[in-house]
Structure formats: C-alpha cells, structure tokens
Length: 198
Image 1 (cartoon, one colour):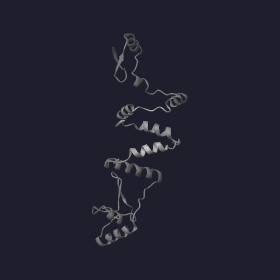
Image 2 (tube, helix red, strand yellow; image 1 turned 90 degrees about the horizontal axis):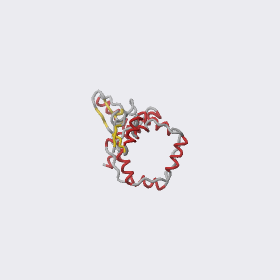
Image 3 (tube, one colour; image 1 turned 30 degrees about the vertical axis):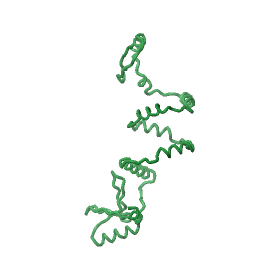
Image 4 (cartoon, helix red, strand yellow; image 1 turned 135 degrees about the horizontal axis):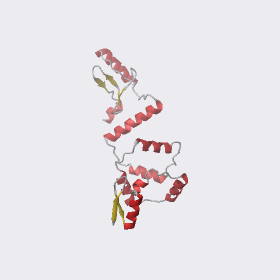
C-alpha cells in the first residue's frame, strides 16, 4: 500500500500500486472530496442523476451513517442562500398519505427543549415581522382597563397594548402584558382558562 497527502486538505490518500502513486504525484492529484469542490454539472447531467436515483431506498445502516455525519453540521450563510434561491418559485409536491403517517408517528411523544422552543418562537416572530411589519399580539381590553386603574392609583406608568403597545423581550420572544420601566414593574394578566388549567 502506497500513500501520499492531498495537496489541498492534507488528508492521506492510499494507492494499491506504485505506478498509481507516481502518476498522482506527477499530476498533483487531490482527494475525491477536494476534487469535487466547485464542480458544476449541466442540467441534463443533474436530471439523469435524479432519474437514476428515483425509487432507490437507503438501508437502515446507510441512514444511520448519514444521520451521524450530518448531526450538528452548521451550513454557511452562502450555502443557505443558494438553497433558498434554488427553491424559490418551486412548488413542493404534496406528501403522500404514507409519508404523512410516518411523519406523524415520528413526532409522537417528542418534547422540545426550552432552547428549541425559544428558537422556534424567535424565528416565528421574525418571519411575521419581515412579512407583515410590526407584530401585534392578541390582548385583553379588560386587562388594559385594570392597568390604567393601577397607573392612576399608584402613579405608575405601565405600558400596555393600548398605551404604547406590549413590550417584547428581545432575547426571549415574549410580550409582557404591562411594564413600567422607571419603577421596574412587570405585570401579567392571567386569563380565566390559565387559572383553570393550573
């Protein structure tokens, strides 16, 4: 077994015959991974590959390896942008009943962590604000009357939905019912159904 290092990523390349090693050194050959970087295929070529893969099912072992290889992978902004542009204007084919069933079964008993919930909450808020502008959460007018009474009685300056709008905690994605920045007061108005749930 003969070896040399890839001139780009420095990984070890193995060769069965010395002649192959000599040729690789002369051509300064890269490893498979590096040689495919930046390669652009024609639409016809991509179509043929796509058709040849139709109906192909990966084994459980292959699925496990793919899952392990992609776990924790973070894609660059440029990569995400390319994917987004590639899918712009394209309509996804509807899921089959079998696919919907598998998706449903895979989510049974699934519980998101607080960190995941926060990410989903912030992503949803950002998406709404980008598409619709300022986000206006639902609120209880009766609660606003109580907040106004508290302002008058205690000389507070509570900001709420009908008085400056509900304040959004940027890092958490929560909207507080009423807040007085000067006196450092936050008030949450619990609806009847919340009390019944608890």
